[in-house]
Image 1: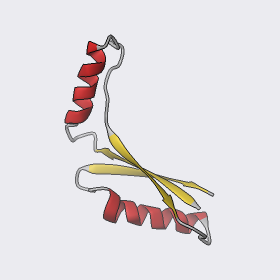
Image 2: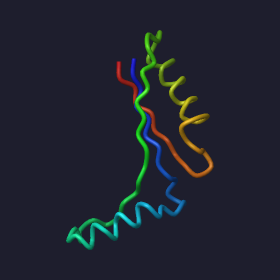
Image 3: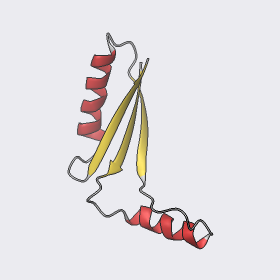
Image 4: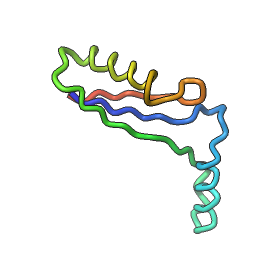
Length: 81
């Protein structure tokens, strides 16, 4: 079973990289882009797991303890069987 983990800065945290990309896009003529937030993507191969529920619980624990800084980052987990 595989899990996809998306980690982004919380909305209340300033995103300087996203802001720089946004400015660059405007400079390139993409004036309709209203904002950019950057993040990280992880794909976890969890091997043989008994259930999707256990896979989600394991991936969320890994995301919370290792992949994200829960003080300033939010994460979202998707499970693929």
